[in-house]
Image 1 (cartoon, rainbow, N blue to C red):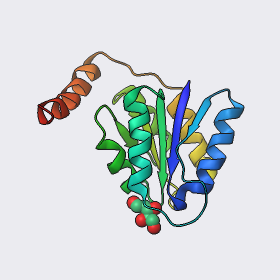
Image 2 (image 1 turned 30 degrees about the horizontal axis):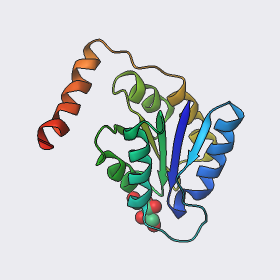
Image 3 (image 1 turned 90 degrees about the horizontal axis):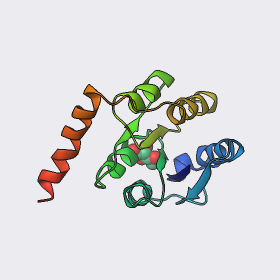
Length: 149
Ligand code: RB5
């Protein structure tokens, strides 16, 4: 599986740790930056990861900023993206099972790294349940289809 990852300066260190964690498990990583701790603007990286997922360049994405809020909002502006900000492992499982989230958003200033890696593992090992949840996810996607007419 190809995973696009992106962060601002606040999420940079966690991005590097998550990359290594996933590479060790055999995932292919596409790093959309940022590439240092120098201050940058999170929307740039939310958009970049979002576009990688939306275009099919990546199967899934991970975005990280200080709280995870700004970069998840940014990624969600890209058509086809369902970015879910998760603060525990249960949310990560539900984001996949019920919402078919294709981008995981994380807050580096909110969560410890052990919890973050646990969230990542749950997200990538849980499948979408479909069924009644498919109808609801389709309703979400119809919102952007209607707005893009
Ligand atoms: C950067 O200081 C911070 O605003 C950013 O990482 C993020 O928390 C925004 O939502």
